[in-house]
Amino acid sequence: MVILMNVDDRFNLIKEVGEEIITEEDLMSLLQDKKNPIAYDGFEPSGKIHIAQGLLRAINVNKMTKSGCKFKMFVADWHGWANNKMGGDLEKIQKVGKYFVEVWRACGMDLDNVEFIWASEILRNDSYWKKVMEMARNSTVQRILRCGQIMGRKEGEVQQASQILYPCMQAADIFELEADICQLGMDQRKVNMLARELGPKLGYWKPVIVSHHMLMGLGEPPTGETDTVEKAIAMKMSKSNPDSAIFMNDTEEDIKRKIKKAYCPEKQLEENPILEYCRYIIFEKFKEFKIERPEKFGGTVEFASYDELSAAFAKGDIHPLDLKNATAFYVNELVKPVRDHFEKDNKAKKMFEEIKQMEVTR
Image (cartoon, rainbow, N blue to C red; front, side, top):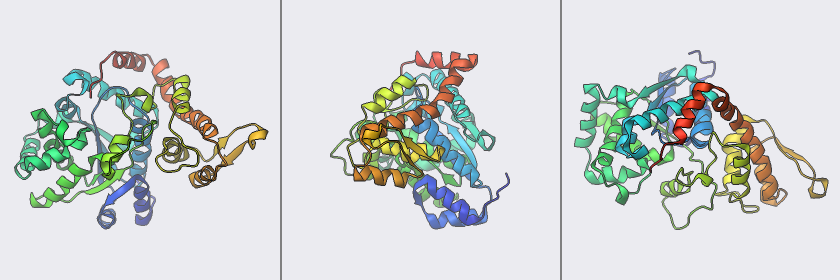
């Protein structure tokens, strides 16, 4: 991999990915020492893939590889099995994993610099289980239970013994994959911190944590949650509520309908899912954002940056419905190549038809 950027440019590009970086000093030191550090993200294959997992993940991964990182995408099939995904059917989980990879291929992830590694492959290594045991022996049950949020569950929702094993496995994954950077969502922060604390104690290293933003769902944000990470988890897209997310195989009509009914208060910038789509996805892919409207409502306007758009919206110059209509257009433009791939490629079409028939369990 040839890197044309200097260390500062590489650092700044990774900062675009990280909503939180622990620590920036460690990241800079790592980039100075290694031209091609290993970054990893992991996913539980479950059901259809929405745009936070599809488009946003591809955007983030491509920034990491552009910065010089060798990226390892971890297909956590056994972890999904431990977490009772797809009804606890490992074969179905693995089929969904292959579908996810096909989506990323269709939406432009830099697969030349991404290696997919399946949990079911590294589980054959004695060295891996030794690491799992090390994580377990050096953690308390309560500490592991608090890591339950990495599975999308609160502490009291962790009921199966396999779900207690899960965080120990995920912490071990980091060192088995030889990852220098944990590049996962904010909801994975607790187990990344566990690995960061235990790594040096066990003779490993202290991985850098680059936590990306979790795209919120389309509905009104829940109230009452004060913990920042727990609130982000509560607000994120949910497959159990299909209208809260745009999926990578949604039709144009689906996209328009979901976005039209989405939460988007006039002049409100914070906790506004439509503006989040614009900031984290649309302006990453398009150089301008055009809102077409009749002359009596101000005529067509164009914005060259998210800051310009958000400033106009905050002043009330852009009506929520006009913003929604434009957002639906651009999101559909990004989803369309993936949708077309799964409609026109016979192998991909057969794969998706099978996925649609599967029951998705939380």
